[in-house]
Structure formats: structure tokens, C-alpha cells
Length: 205
Image (cartoon, rainbow, N blue to C red; front, side):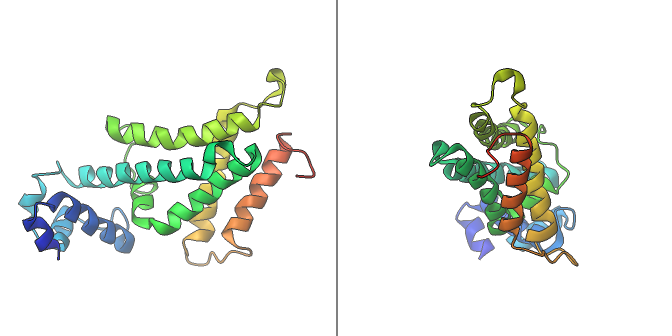
């Protein structure tokens, strides 16, 4: 199948698709460029027509992943509707959904060790995803007087870290990490406790 894609001029995407499978099975560090070429049905030399090397290939997968992730986060945020709190919580659930549906992209984005500043396109895609959560955080805190308002960048980063932790520990089937509750419930309750502690939502919400 991959050779057919290559003959049709789709070698670049065939390599990406083959590499995604390798990442899911063997981790972002567990394969070579030759492995990717073999899986795509081409010679290693053919890979260099589209990618400078293995890291460049993984970087492109991460870039695509961040573009998809940002689109999903935008959709989940839904312009802050039906409420600032509901929209903020929806972005957390979108994080879990993305990690489940696109594990290869997720691992390339967060577990490959590549720098998000390695090229402008990757950096821009990653920033677009972060900007959604930042916007949600800023909207959620607008009712608090400026002098007492926690920095939106701080609690946006904390919620990102909480979401990431739930994914890594309980949502991806890591050995010995059976969750005591569904990952979505863990994340939602954690977000609620954190936001109440900052005074961002009333105690009864």
C-alpha cells in the first residue's frame, strides 16, 4: 500500500503515516530512519527527498499534531460558550480526547524530546494551541479585580500540566496505572478544586 502511495507521488505522507505507526508501537525514540523507509516501502535514500533526517520527520509529525490539537481546542472552547467555566473545562477534556485519538502525534509532540522552537512552523503551531488555553484562562478571570487576579499564564500552565499528568498516568494505559476514577472525572474534579482555590469560581459551582 505504501509503495502505491509512493508511485502516486505521496511519499511524504506515506512516510509520515508509517512513522506514526512506528511511534505508537515503539516510542518516538524506538525506530530509525531506515525503519521508517522500510515501513513506507521505499529506500532510505528516498526519504531525503522530503526530510533532512529522522528528527525532521518527527518534527513534521509534531507540527501536524499541534495544528490538529489547536483546531480541537478551538472547537472545544467554542468562543467561551455556554459559560467561561464550561468552556475552560471543555479544553481540558479536549486534551484527553486528542491524546486518545491521536497517540502517535501526541507522543511526537510531547515525548520525542524535540524542541518546539526547532523551526518556525512547529513553534507557531504549538503557540496557537497554547493561545486557546490562555484565552480561556483570561476570560475566566475577568471578574476578579486586576490587583487580585492571578496571572492567566500561570493557571493556564497549571491546567495544561494537570491535563498532561492525567493523560500520562491514567489515560494511556501505562503499566500499573489503573485509575481509581475515569480520567475525565479526575481531570474535571482537579480543575474544579484548583480554580476554586484561586477564587476563580464560586464554591458552589
